[in-house]
Image 1: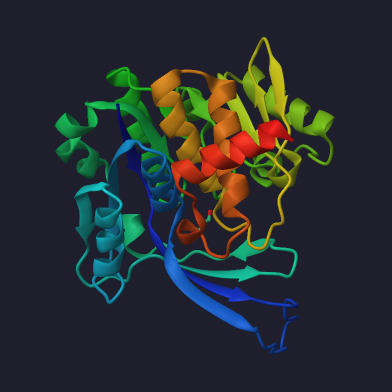
Image 2 (image 1 turned 120 degrees about the horizontal axis):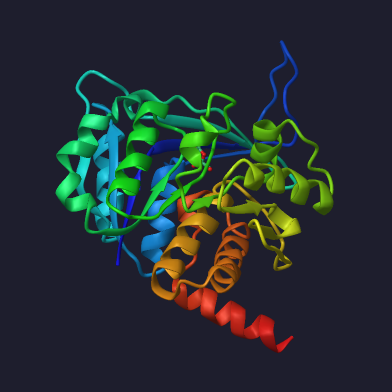
Length: 308
Ligand code: RIB
């Protein structure tokens, strides 16, 4: 049961702030940390930490960050055969600002991630054909994303697309070839131009996408939970109540854990529940990948929670 993540990696430069500066203003951030991130890499790490066999396809730069990113994947047992360095380019970096409520604002500089191309998928095709699920996000070129979706379709491999960061350029017809489409509510609003302030509004926006042909839309809604919408059904999962200190990478935590469970049990709701617990634990710690729990910690959390 191999999961292939075809996507980005970034170096997260996280400043913990009390207040966002306005134009022309300088503010002091009390804390800073640097860590491995990027939506693709985060999802790969979450899936691997939850026990999946993961292959990561991504591009790093030719700089001081590259070896550390590769070492980090290796340490977690992720297959890095298709993690390649691009000469003369920087690695992807992501300045992140986390406020006192744990909410984040993220800027990404794609760097080498822009050079993950359809030809890379062709070169890895024999290996990719062995996967049970392909995970994609939008921090690489759309052309590569569509190529990967069609690769999945051709070889009958389900694809999970996380449309993040959201862009109106996304071709929904291509996205309809995916098994799962997993936006957060902000991305859902951008993609549909619809309001997403209440659960009903989120349901309507997700239904709008389903009516366009998307099969399974799973909306991650942070502390409000998650919603699974299909043509026939809408199921809502409440979130686990925890004390959030940093929500960066929580959506990726959910997706990686969801994928790891789903390839084993084929049960969407059960996988969403475990993913929700995994993501809940991640927000109780600072950082992105570094905040992800182990499978044992999630099981212990779930068993305590079920008793309460
Ligand atoms: O989803 C969180 C991630 O978004 C961060 O790790 C950052 O690198 C950006 O890609």
